[in-house]
Image 1: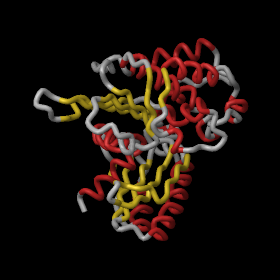
Image 2: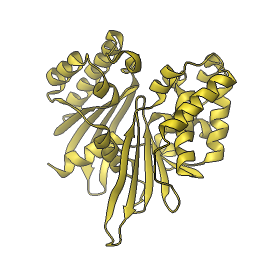
Image 3: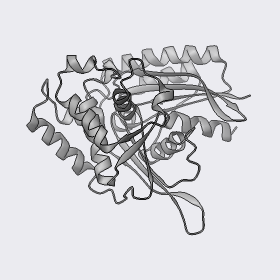
Image 4: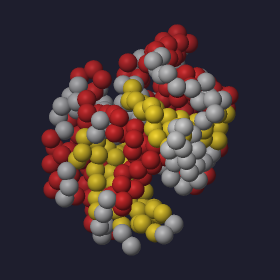
Length: 309
């Protein structure tokens, strides 16, 4: 059986998937998520911060060792928003080449969107159901609509990447501790404006959300003391429940936020802005609920590695 590994170098988190191809589809052998905040300050400077590069290189060194131990047949590494938007990635590129033996593909926002939806539906038995999927990352948000045409063929008829995410919005609109109402209002207005051009609506479509902000909000809703991807994957939250969770997060201090069951400490400082982005997307789509996917780009990339072997 083929074994593959994929790494998604994101603006906030670096994700690893090691999976095996079976007759039932891909099965995860190992998964890891490490907050390195590669996009620290990128929205302002357009240059990767040396400390962020150090954290990311340390993480990738660890992942390289795990991949070696797992003896994978194929490996792929992609960089997304922070690496698209900023200079200073030479050390990251060189490390991946030397330690993992492949080059980093810095993918476009549209390519990120395409791989995201391919991975997000994995294991949810959505088959060819019409859906609108979105991924709120640290630096960007991707929105994709999958439709069935008059000829019966299923295709992506809308996919776009937006230059706003949990890290980027936090840096554009710094919040007090705890946040002030006027600061929250400004952040909400900024998020709503970012998605004003989205033409699609969710009526008649499953709304699917993925990536760390969405899964963290789901884990908080579920009250998970320890993150459990099997409980998060496929969990359905109403927009009203999301508003409740984001409301609680928006009225607590950073120290209190870190103690909330389901909260990853590395996301506590950006989760309010991230939650505001999620709600802005849902309101623009006029969606009343969201189904959560614990999978995303790394899974779509792994599916491609197997399919093209």
